[in-house]
Image 1 (cartoon, helix red, strand yellow):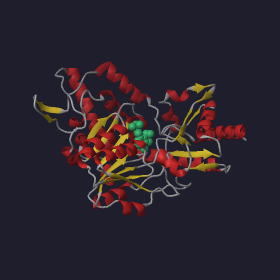
Image 2 (cartoon, rainbow, N blue to C red):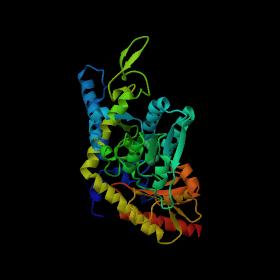
Image 3 (cartoon, rainbow, N blue to C red):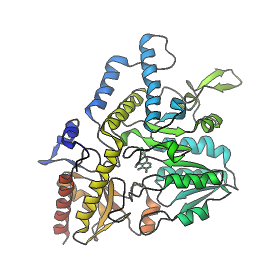
Length: 410
Ligand code: PMP
């Protein structure tokens, strides 16, 4: 794979040199959380060593520096996803889940009623599925689910059937964290907009791994998490079109998000601050901006190709013995950098603990998509997921470790 200089990239990640039981770590749990390169760790340390102060309200020099860095970080993130409105369209949250909840509460709770429908897909992560399900329960609205076909793709005929004049919101995962499927979000946005509905794109597995341009997709909202894109935990992003965010009521109330407060009433600060109540995620925001620089320096399209090649290589290797079921699109179809699978009759949890003996770190479980696993008729699956620093040799180690498991359970 010659898209990336992986050897050079790996030097920025001391954690990848760790050994467990004499075996060097093979970290293949990147869809859960990616590792953090030195330059992002340095940004965090530098911030606390030299710039740390509360933002927005301080008149002193340190606070002004922290404020400028924090506010500029919103512009950097806007640029990373092609949001031409800049900082006004970028709200910093805790994670993708909080971004989903922000829209569900601030918009959904106020706008949805018994006559409305929210259209999701059967491959939604619980972050969107549970959130809209519960908001629908509170408002009397109905959740509907676009079916997933046997090849792991969405049934677009069904999408056309479901999305209609009663649809108020379409919430879709861009790249499935379980199947790896890349969904046609731009086409879904067109269908939603034809029916005056909004589209919310869950970009948790797309923004870190491929070029994403919110305006090319025409997403009304898009959410993602810093910890899946070489950034820190504790920060997520909600992108929203400016005119929609302007009309939305705040989700959290308190300091920083207000303009004028009296004993009787309050008015709200300008975007995006009206959605960032209290002391915000200052250091995390600044570090996320550094992660955006880092990823753009490598090149998002090179990252996409690298991950897709590793995923395709993994599928080829895993399918070899004929006793492994791969979830999601078949070999050869472009997918996100992850492969979920089941080894004949070996529970995914047992498999992952055997792989752990070889220091191969994968995920096992339902990956926060229980209804999808129910539909597929499997209780769980094992998932290997890749990032910029992974290599074909690491995929080979995964395959060898699975072979050990095969012997053990034979
Ligand atoms: N959506 C998808 C597709 C995800 O993969 C994840 C993380 N597993 C989330 C949402 C939730 O992200 P977070 O836990 O950072 O809120």
